[in-house]
Image 1 (tube, rainbow, N blue to C red):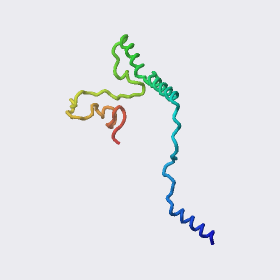
Image 2 (cartoon, rainbow, N blue to C red):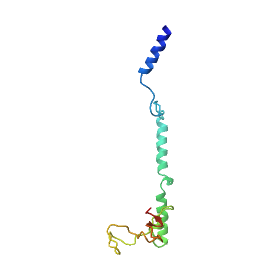
Image 3 (tube, rainbow, N blue to C red):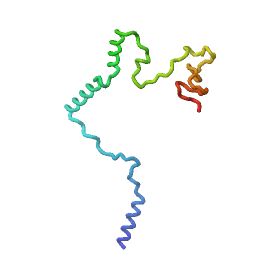
Image 4 (cartoon, rainbow, N blue to C red):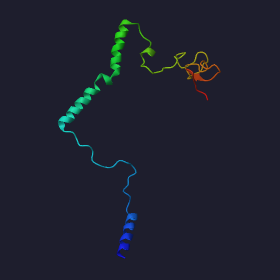
Length: 130
């Protein structure tokens, strides 16, 4: 009889106690130990040195190359100064907010029907109406 009461009381306790399972996988615990002061200072010094290296500042190297090439060559187009893989698209056909041919205000700067042979609305060969 004593065993039945013990078994019964433990099952009731399990039903009443709130679940300690968390809905996330992170288990609470201490953070990593702090570095000694000398090692922390060295780490911060190396971080500053790495952030100032040329590997993290490609624009500075490109500016040096651009200034040396500009001195010996005529002014380059802005599209040539872009890094590889950057696509600018077609140059605008007009400046300002009003299209001089159609009188449209605030519309596209390029004629969308120019690129498609069948009258598709496309910009630089990419169709925009489906």
